[in-house]
Structures are given as C-alpha cells and as structure tokens.
Image 1 (cartoon, rainbow, N blue to C red):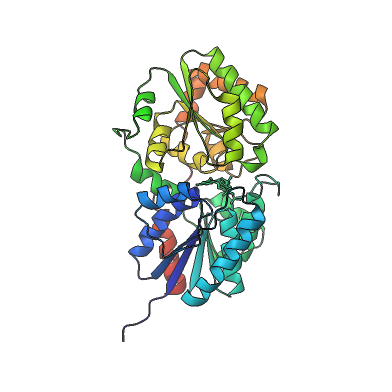
Image 2 (image 1 turned 45 degrees about the horizontal axis):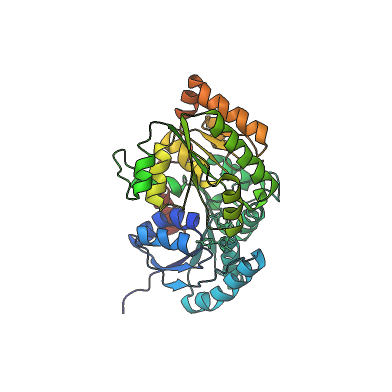
Length: 373
Ligand code: UD1
C-alpha cells in the first residue's frame, strides 16, 4: 500500500480569487500534497474565463450564483454546499483567499468540521468595518477563523500581530497576484479582441476605468461618472476604456451615465490576459478594485483609487497609488493633475512595486509543507 499524502482543499468562487489562487494550485500540483479544487461559482462567467485560462478543472462546483443574490444567499449556499464535500474529503487543511463571501463561508464551513484553515492574502485592513462592505468584515472574520496566515506584505503581517495572531503562523509571502500577472503580460502582446487591438493603437492617451464596489453603488458612482464625462469633454486627446462588471445593477447605472458618449468605450469584462495587457497599455487607471491596486504598481501604471478607504497602504507609500475618493471635484482635480504634470506622472509610474516578486505561491506551499508534512 502506498502512503497517503496529506490533502489540501482550495475553495474560491469569484474572478479575483481564481486569478490569485491559480498560482497556488499550480504550485500544489507540483508539491507532495494531494489536493482538490472546489469552486463555489459565486461568479459564473467571470470565474469560468479564469478557470479556462489557467486550465483549472475543479473537482467540485457548487454552482451557487443566482441573479440578484444577497450576501445571505451566498453565505448559506457556500456553507450548505461545502459540508458534505469536507466530510467526504477530510483534508488536512482548507485554503481560502482574501475577503469575499465565498472565503468567509468556506472558512466557517472548515471550522465547523474542525479542519485547519489557511488564509491566502491575510491581514489586509481598513479602519472601517463597513468599507469596503462586506469585505472588511469578511477578512477580519476569516483571519479569526484561520490557523495559518499568508500575509502579502509586512504591513499585513503587522496588522495580524496587532490583533493577537500567533506569530509562528504568520508568514510574509508576497501577493500571488504578481505571480499570475508576470505570466500573462507581454510587451509585444497582440490583442485577440479586434476592438481592444484597435483601442490600444489609438494615438490618444488611454485611461482605463473599473468600478464594482457594493458600497459605491448609487450616489458615489454617480459622482464618479459625472467626473469622467467632464474629463473626456475637456481632453480631446484622451480616450476612456470602461471595463464593465457583470453585476446588472452597476451595468445599468454605467450605461445610463456614460453610454453613447464619444471617446468613452464601455467594454465587456475582457479575459484576464487581455485585461492585464490592457492595463499595460493604459496611460493610467482609475478604479475601486483592490487587485488592480496591486497589479498596477508591478506594471508601472499610476492609479487613482476611487474609494474612501484602502487596505493597500503600501502602494500609497510607494507612490503608485493616489487615493482620491469618490467626490466628483476631487476626481476631476486629480485626473487633471496627472494628465497635465509629467513630473508627477513619472514619479508615480516609477515607484517600486511593494507586492512581491512573483514567487508568493511557492512560498505558501513551502510553509504548508513545513507545517503539515
Ligand atoms: C464579489 C465580491 C468582491 C469582489 C468581486 C470581484 C463578495 C461579497 N463580493 O463582488 O469582494 O471584489 O466579487 O468581482 O464576495 N454576476 C454575473 N456573472 C458573473 C459575476 C457576477 O451575472 O460572472 C452578477 C450576478 O447577478 C451577481 C452580481 O453580479 O448577483 C454580483 O455578484 P456578487 O458575487 O454577489 O458580488 P460582486 O459585486 O461581484
């Protein structure tokens, strides 16, 4: 009889978790561990794109997504769906990522089975439980439930220590998003989508925009979109590419505010490789995304962060990120400054990347090997 290899179950459900867990799964597949991939399907199309790209074939798919799903729907469906899987697989640890409701549900489901939880991208914090909502509380709770903390930066590790996490189980690894990004961005990349190919050859300066945060839906997003219209009206040498999220509530608001406007291009969410290379072609980026705040510094792209808080202070200290908030006047002023002031632009573009060297996933697996093998 062969020896039984310790087993790790990874659980994720949204596009960004899939991008950031793909390098971990790749490293697991080359490790001494047995492993299983469980997707919750909190996102459907956006998740499936990433699974296909990284050739990940989940062992289980809970397929929980419903249109108009509430946080309670997602949490309960993840808990109910995972229970029999964890009972059947009896893994030595469950790995979750970040701050989504899938991550919280999966960490809790593992805790109920008394299975140790490893948290990838542990320790990010804002000072406000409701911002971002519900992610700030999700990640605090996941860290409370987790046994092993894989912090992307020293700042994140310090946050965990300050909350009393056992330092023996807090590891600074870098962020796995950099592992994924370095694999897909190429200076001579040729876009498959003809519209993107054409846009990236434009002589205009390209501003890339995304907005998807729940806490920004409504008046905050309205302010952001008014600012974007003004910027485009005043700068004939600027084009704006707006990558839509699949959330119908946001799509509706964006289309009403920015549809049918010259030099504003609303595009469907591109596949990750196309999106990463689109970031690389942008002059700069305006976003409320967390992941983009980590990716852009590695690409040397300034980011105006359209949020009232950020859990990525490292990018602000390094100089790539500028948190401008969601007020129309502030966004217009910051964008004008960055379009007009070359020295400012260069300072932001040349700031160092604080999020890692592309080897985070291997570090995580090395720590797990020391802990469990
Ligand atoms: C989720 C995460 C957020 C993460 C974001 C990345 C939570 C609470 N939020 O937010 O932390 O930053 O993903 O995108 O976990 N939809 C589709 N197809 C898709 C994806 C979404 O139709 O492929 C629609 C569904 O109708 C769904 C809605 O978008 O009801 C919102 O999706 P949901 O996962 O609930 O929240 P996100 O805003 O995507």
